[in-house]
Amino acid sequence: MIRVGLDVDGVIRDLVSSIMKLWDKLGRSYKPVEQWELEASFGDDVGRIINSDEYAWVVFYDFARPYEGAIDFYHSLCSIADVTILTSQRSISAKFATDAWLKRYTFWGPVVYTSSKEDVDCDVYLDDGPPFIEKLHKAGKLVVVMDRPWNRHLGGYQRVTSYEEFLSLCEFLNQWLPSSQGLQI
Image 1: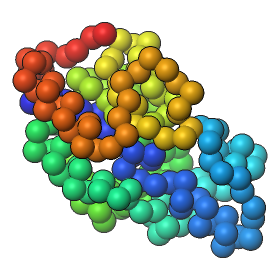
Image 2 (image 1 turned 90 degrees about the vertical axis):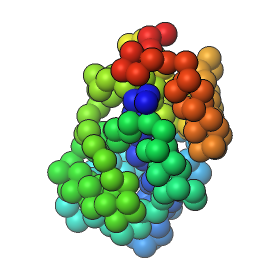
Image 3 (image 1 turned 45 degrees about the horizontal axis):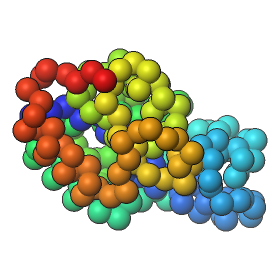
């Protein structure tokens, strides 16, 4: 079986909608999210607020929902691949909330908190974050882009617009990639 590195926010958890709900509750305005940098849509203090002890649980657990089809996708993926969940939560509060969220929605399995996803040995990675996509590519890793408005400027990468497309790619890789061989590009 191939080894898949699966990102959380922007791939299986809709963090942007969760932040929008918090901003609505706080009476704050925001712009449509079309860039990776959340500050462009939510203001310069978004990182401080969502990672704070006061709001991390609300953003990363209470308001956070899986994207439609994400739970079924994850369980289907686990039947054809060894999946490691990769996320780069910065604050302790966000990590605790993310752990609880993953369990709540049955995303069981190994979880690695890291900003250096390229150091986690996988055959293929599914991510939406431009900085992570570029770092994985520069490290010679096979990275697939989950299509989102904030990464459409990136060209030259394998891109999927649905979970089904990624599952098909993984089924193909399982046929052609020797187990635990690792794929370098």
